[in-house]
Amino acid sequence: MGRACVLDERSLTERLDCAAAAHRLGVFVHLVRIMSSRAFAFILATALVAGLSPALAVVGGTTSQDVRGARASTLRVETSRGELCSGAAIAPELVLTAAHCLMGGGSVSVVSLDPRFRARRHAVIAVLPHPSFVPGTTPRTQPGTDLAMLRLAAPLPADIQPVTLGGGLWQGETVTMAGFGLSVEDNKKTARRLRETRLVNAGNYTTQNTVKVAVDAEAKGESPGAGACRGDSGGPVLRGNAHSRDLVGIVSWSSGPLNSRARRICGGFTAITPVSEHRSWITEAAARLLAMGPNPRQLEREPPAAGYSWWFSR
Image 1 (cartoon, rainbow, N blue to C red):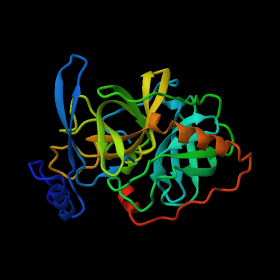
Image 2: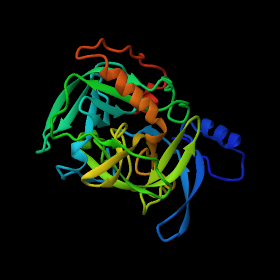
Image 3: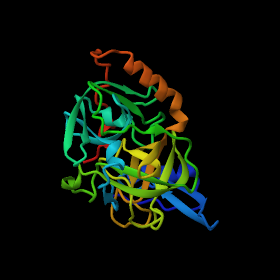
Image 4: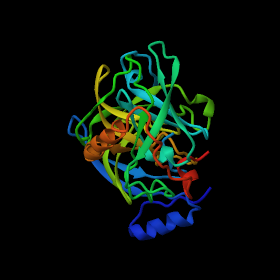
């Protein structure tokens, strides 16, 4: 455990130096002011605290039970090296997920849930990370876009309903996040069950790249609340009602709450890659993968790189 840096009047550089000295834990604080539906202003402190992690199940969420809800578009992404992520079906043969989910190498497969919530495995024959994503980085040093697209060997079953790409996320908006990650931090047995929760978009967070940061409306990121955890990376962030949803983002990473005394990586802040800002790449990637035909040659993959364990912390 390292010493947490406290928000004060020091310069950003001094605070980053403090974080680096804290045994790679780091607290990077950015104040975000948002307005509620009653025009009530409040300030959220966005902390990337000890053990900042790629979002790997939903803590503080509920188990998905609606056949026509998140089940119909949220998929589990697994690698032969045992890594777990989530993903969103955007076409019968295409899945959008997080690029860091592919950093470990190995083969990739996708799991969907049938209407009785039983698992079905689907082969992945090609993967295409966003060209700006840099392997060997950490969540806070990643300069690129944490998105990747998967091409399946065959179309998904008819009961899976791909989501449509939505518009931009607006500050203060309430959205639904779904994923297959942990519901109890550090308990791997709680993963692989689809869960979802409602979060509020608190605004932008910028380090080397810019993401949206969402929080539990009640906990506000200050105390433990709902949010992404290990296994939720790549999962969809959705706008709309249970049966008509647009994809507005993909989960990238999570952190613990600001006021937690223990080292936590979940239940605080959920970082989201907004899809509206990357619509052109998504369209181009989809066309490229679908043009490869039924038996494409596997696209080249980056080997595991330094920093890999920072995204997939155990």
